[in-house]
Image 1 (cartoon, rainbow, N blue to C red):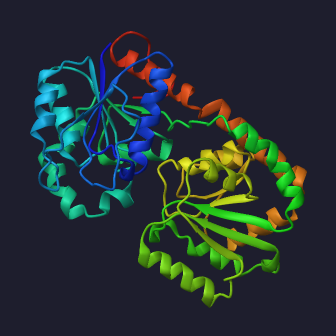
Image 2 (image 1 turned 120 degrees about the vertical axis):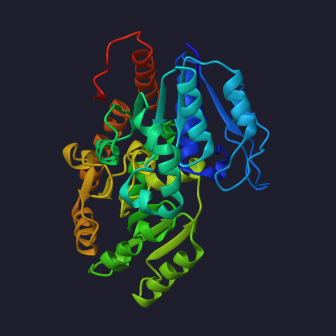
Length: 386
């Protein structure tokens, strides 16, 4: 089987879509199911292509023009090279459309992974740009897809609302767990026992729809503010970040809220492991890799109802509730009253959930099953809905 995935941008600055795509394809190679990825070289001198120069990354010279990023190079590659199945990541870019179009022309099956782009909030953002593209090509591309791959049930519902009636596969994003997590886990209990302050945290892009300020409003309702700390990890919208800093001063929380900026790698996991709870107060998140990353180091998570994380409640490893300041304050109070063994037990249930369902090899095997089903080599997997 020859499989090709495509993506419009594969630079490190392209965001979570590039990271998830790289992690998935890497995991598939690791389980012995190789496939190729087609993309364009990065143009931004400050950016760098994902990966370490793997041969399966087919990065063509970047000849993209117009905001739609039309590329003759992509067109010629897709027309001249034959694959058994095509799989494109994202929507609204020429790369996505031409992948679908060429697959149809070659009478080969194709998959679209929208990466949350059909959520109402995402769809309506700059809709005046998307509407003509939907009418010209993307409604057809989506309607005729052999399968749409989503990461959770809410996303499947939004794909149905858009008008797609074909097969939908629910496969979560993979979690690549670094080897040093074992070392970090051994330090977690000793950190809790030696640290006198309760440590809450947020990790992610700073953007108004993330509703980070709700953490401040919730924290300001606590009677033990001087005994807890809230760390904000991430960068993004500079105007929004200044708003957040101003809010901490207005609320008298300058000594309790710390802005750490962008963190990554081992430092990210070490900071997550030191938290008593991670908060994800976003308006919506398609999957939220940060949730699985926090759970993987035994940190409970509070996520808003705009995220697909009901398992935090059902698996008793966190809170899946409305992101109001009152609810956030209530969770903070519950955490403050919990003993260290209770917090560690909750964290261990989260680690078990990640290991059972979200590790990269498990996700890669599901994608392999999907490909094999679409190519008529096995029965329909249980995670595919028609």
